[in-house]
Length: 202
Image 1: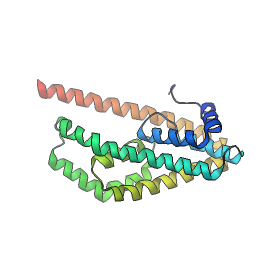
Image 2: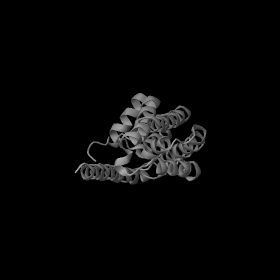
Image 3: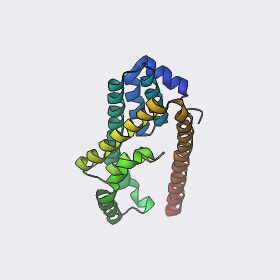
Image 4: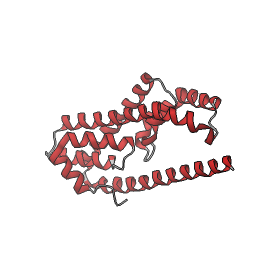
C-alpha cells in the first residue's frame, strides 16, 4: 500500500534514531498500525552486518518493542475489548455462554497462537487483543507471547544479517499483501455488523 514506509525511509530512521526507532515502530506495528515489521527487522539486520548498528542494543530494542506492542494489545483487549463485548456482543450473537466457551478454548489452545502468530501476516495484530478479550491469564499470555517475540525477532534480524537484500524484496511483498488482507477483513467485519444491526432494529 502507498502509505507503507519504503526501505529507504526505514533505513534512514534506523541509522539516525537507532534502537528508539526500532522499538517504537515495532510496538506500533504489533498494535496494528501499518508498519512493515519483517522488512524493518531485515533492514536492521543488514545494517548490523554493515556495521551501522550494534547487534546487542538493536536486538534489545527489537525485542522490547515487540513485547511492548503485544502487551498493549493484550491490555486493550482486556479492557476495551471486554467493554465492546458487553455492549455490542449481542449484535454478533456472542452470548455469555459462547463467551465462556471462547475463554475456555483460548486457555487451552489459543495461547499457542501467541507463539506462532508472529510469523503469520495479519495474525499477530489480533492475537494479543484476542487473548485479552478472552481474559487469558497474564502468566500464560507472557510465557507464550514473549517467547514468540524472542523467536520472531531473532529469526528476522538473522535473515537480514545473513541473507541481506536477497530476502528483503520478498518480505516487502508479503507485508503489502498482508496489509490489504487486514483492511479487507476489517471492512467485511464492519459490513457484517452494520447489516446485522439494521436487521435487528427493523
